[in-house]
Length: 327
Image (cartoon, rainbow, N blue to C red; front, side, top):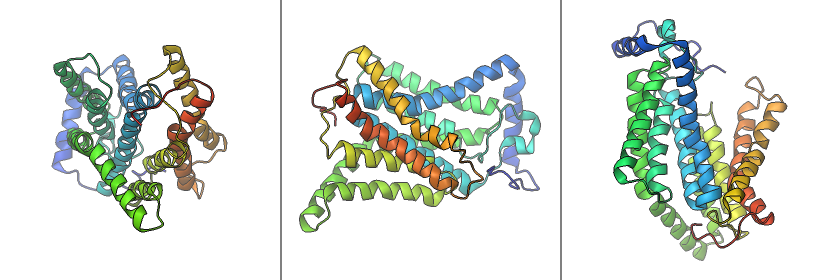
């Protein structure tokens, strides 16, 4: 379903007129070859860091840090989808079709790509495993890649400059909250759950899962049109809390040879997309009356496979060993 239907008002706000002129100025260098390169860059640079890199962390470097990165990615995705739906800002090409170099089906503000780039690049570079990169180089990369992503979205005519600026601001804000408070919040929830379990029949994992489910349903509340992020967050929490932790899986993401890690990633990715392929081949699309429910369950299943089932499979297949200190 295209959310932009009947979304264009009669008058064009001045800020968007300025934005369209800015887009046209950027597009003075446009040519077919460059456009194809930009299309590839804008998606690979975001989804690579938003999905693939956290999966590498979870299965091949540090399970807990990978889980945190996926939590913040899924929540951030749902949050930006919700803000887009609330603000109802039409894409630039709905006012000026001549700037359209590619299309999108959602609203415009904020830029989800800019948000994800500003959130995930710094998160991977600074929160992830220690690297030999110097801090100055990390800072440079954490700035230049989100900047390039934002410019690419303007070039393609799918975002106003104000969309990109708001995406950068929101992504930076969520990153600092994530970087500074993730482990503190997790410890607070665990401490609260442990204290509550002593005075009631509720156990620790039920309280922790209720907290994660609360975040998931908050995303549904603000954006029930797109439930990918909410489903993914729900599934990640379920897999971690009800599969990984109770079974005390003897999984060490950093263990194993390079070949074993490559095999873990390939196997994990292949198994994780099974729910997506199932929905696709079942031909469940937006016209289906229960489409959003199926999408939620689809991505919840993916999340549970990623955080719970795959570590168990890796251990059963003797692809890793040792106690995961980062768990």
